[in-house]
Amino acid sequence: MNVSAMIKMTLSMAIFGSIGFFTIQTGIPAVELVFVRCICATLFLGGLWLLLKQHKTEIWQRREVVRTMICGIFLVLNWVFLFKAFEVMSITVSITLYNLAPIFVLILGTLFLKERMSFTSLAAIIVCFLGSMLIIGTQNVQSWADFTGSGFGWALLSAFCYAMTMLLGKGITHLSAYSTTFIQTTIGIIMLLPFIDFSVFNGLTMSNWGYILGTGLIHTGFVYYLFFDSLRKLPTSVISALVFVDPVVAILLDTVILDFRPTFLQAAGIVLIFGGIIYTIWKPERKTAELTQEKIV
Image 1 (cartoon, rainbow, N blue to C red):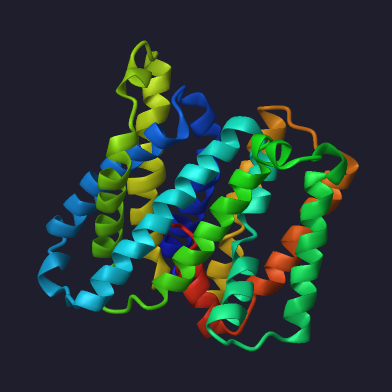
Image 2: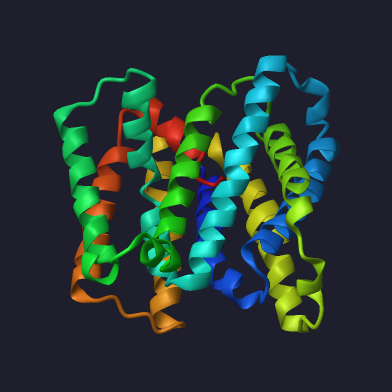
């Protein structure tokens, strides 16, 4: 076991788990925060890409670059929808629904990639669906406006976009992780620029700026570096387990610092969802590696 790589992977997941806490402390809307995050990631990881001279060994294929760009669109939408969910509901519920992405991968793979769904996979989907219903609570959602306004819609959209990022990312085999992320975050800057309200940055406190830059430099640049640096040095089984450090940290921060207390039904729903997700992620080693490599995104 590579202890150094294991520490880096654990640290990257733990830091990423605090992104919800940082997000609600920034004082700016989701779109503007993702815009800053894309700028920081582009500069940080682009600088590493050049510094490590990996740009000299890249294999550029037109089809793969186009796929990377489309993947980048879903990546950015994934961030925007997740941060919008953080704005209107608890981090615990947002993160739980966001982690339904592997279930969406199963469903989309069956519908569009003609992948065969086993009975146990179908059972995992049903369990996660029931968990989602317990978390959302149909008695609290009587209309589409209630559903979107409560944040559940944003969280589920973020999970769907995350799943699309996973599926599209499977076809990217030649570009390095640094060049892939550089392209995707650059796409994010271009995509979000027309929608940015720069006035939201007026009147921010030093604390706000600290959380904003932390979200960009630490949660995106530094975490991506730790993750990619350790990814290929650890066995799949260890990576699969460490991935769950992210939601555990997020839920602990939400309950301990922000005093979130789920209802009994919500707690049961969270248990059901993560039970289904654990089964979905713990696949044969090859498939697990593909899903886990996309987790940080």
